[in-house]
Length: 146
Image 1 (cartoon, rainbow, N blue to C red):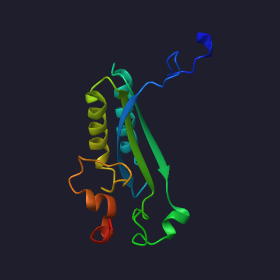
Image 2 (cartoon, rainbow, N blue to C red):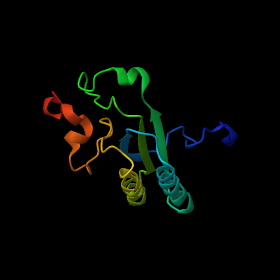
Image 3 (cartoon, rainbow, N blue to C red):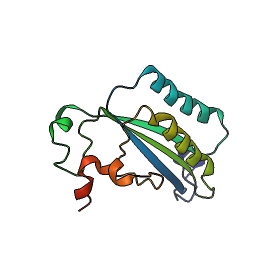
Image 4 (tube, rainbow, N blue to C red):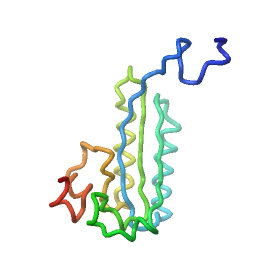
């Protein structure tokens, strides 16, 4: 296949390059204030100015509506009173240590904590959470996980 037809991120042999990632999260029970927005943008801008390999992203997932009509203790997803979820991810080439990427995650998570509810998304296992059971399961923690 001519080089112009190679897919981005693939080697000429067609093998995808390996990448590693980590993620952290926060739930927010109210809209993000101007200070919160600035904190988040500062973290993204700081990474953009750095020369770190790998990438970072923040996904904001809106909640509310039908999600919030279910009782928080009816399912393992207890974050029914949340307004939105922020998912912070960082990736780096498999041959690297990922120290800069995980440092960005930690700094971003710390910067956003004062704006967040203290809850975290169960699908992102976070070894740095000091009270993971409460962060993941809230008031339903005594019954979860089953």
